[in-house]
Every structure is written in structure tokens, then in C-alpha cells.
Length: 134
Image 1 (cartoon, rainbow, N blue to C red):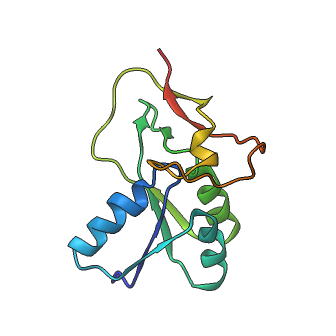
Image 2: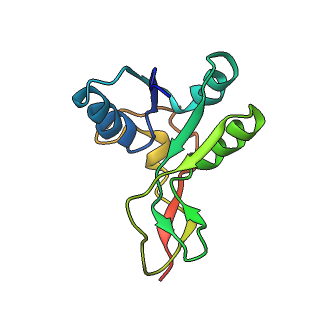
């Protein structure tokens, strides 16, 4: 089939989608749009999304994959909306697998690389991410 449009999630809090994926889409002159992470499931419901493709930070010998924490919600939404879900990776990673760990709450409460706070002063934040198990 023909690629009609790419929707790239911003991938908060580090914005890899906004900084890297959107850049690659534009460099390759692909039709694409950067979206907020929270928009992905709504697009699957109304825009006729044919498939979801995510990367992999780790691939186990049995084929299990680990990726960014937001991949979980994409997988659930894809299954709910009967959208094909693929994990793309360039090679197998050896070494320790990943575990979900709590990171500095700044990832959820401020914009990366700035002193712009995205919450009321005393509102706590949570920021989980994949970390290597050593």
C-alpha cells in the first residue's frame, strides 16, 4: 500500500517525536503531522488509521519487546480500534532487559530544557520510564 500520512506523537517528556521523528518525516518529505501523545487513540477512532508502528528499546531472545512507557497506551488503543500494531527495530539488543522505574517528577511537571512549570506550585507529578535492569 501507499503511505498516505504519518502522525508522530510528541513523546513527552523528552519530546523525541517532536525533535526526531517529525524532523525525519520532514527530511524525507513525507506527509506528516505532529500530535500530542493524548490524541493518538482519538485519531484511531475517527481518522481511519491503518497501523501503528513503534520502535523498540530492547528485544528479548523470545521476541518480546520493551519500549517507551507510552507504547502501552498505543497498543491498547490499537487493539481496541482493530488497528494493526507493529514494532520496528534495527537489531537485537543484548544485555539487561528494562524495568519500569519512577524518574524525577520534573518530566511530568515542567517542559524539558526549560524552567516553565506546567502545574500549580504544590501539585505533585509522576514520571515513569524504562530503565535497564543491572
